[in-house]
Length: 189
Image (cartoon, rainbow, N blue to C red; front, top):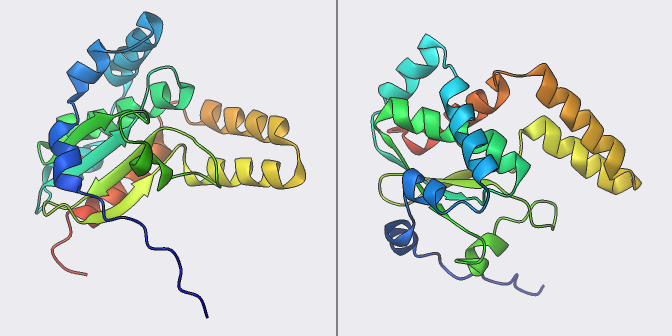
């Protein structure tokens, strides 16, 4: 049986070191309207007390590499959720990169074989890759995959839009990101 190809090892510490923080990333935004929408999304997001408590009481530091560009609607919608969790926590540090800065890294995180952002890669305090999220919640990704499978992505996108409208507080995204944060901060299996 042939051996599968071996992906190059990712030098997470170097990528993390050269990635930029939220404010610098936002300052570099291509679209003033999207920058304003991201800031509004961050200001409007409210976390439940138990969500805040969960991310404030992590046992270990969590590092997140966010592959994100402000032109993307899903980035505008989801980056504020990740950043709000990081801002409340103090134990979640997010750094931002673009696809162009790290095409080899981005190629590892394709969605159903296609390029889609954002992608959030969760790392432990020792830079161990513990999971990734994106470009949208699990149920939405499955809808898009089904739409691709049957040749009707347009209808799938319409259903995704309805799911987004039904969750204005972004509760699903908050829950999914907290699960990944808890995994990366785990001190025991």
